[in-house]
Image (tube, rainbow, N blue to C red):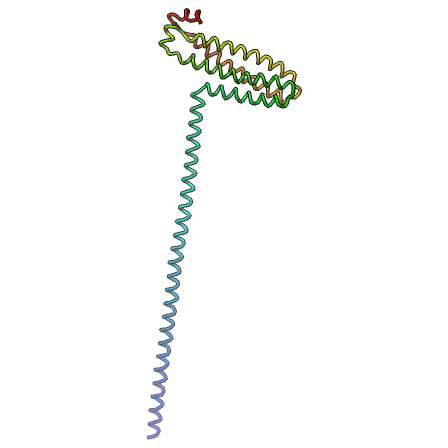
Length: 231
């Protein structure tokens, strides 16, 4: 009888131990599962947050790139438009071209005059006269070209302005001769070269206006001979 009770007690004890072991393993498994789930959830949240941050950063970079591209395109468009305007002005206004060329030549001549001292004063006077004469010539040319075809047919070109322009051109030629003489007296070869280049510019400008005056007198007019005689 005692042996039977002892065996029964041992069996019950073993059964209790097994139940506790299973319960312990279940709790540990549940805790481990919860921990794994928590880690997995945190990883998922971190991944979402990282993706969102990357998207925001990418959007910011894309916006900055687009803005830079737009600014570059706008700058290029403005530069192209400005170039077209400047080209249009220079090509459609020969008078402005001539004035600009003479003004640049005069500026260089004045710089030579400053470096040459005493004889440079003669260069300065001639340079200033050339600038004033160019203004007069362009005014003459403008008035000559303003005469319409109908008026030119009856009374001819504007001979008064043509004669005034021719007188000014003669003055320019005399002054250019003086410049050539002065140039040969300069000891500095650099100044000689610069003065030679500016003399060439003045001669070319004068030749262009002479051609305009010649062309203005071409063509038939009814009473042009009388207008020329009176002028």
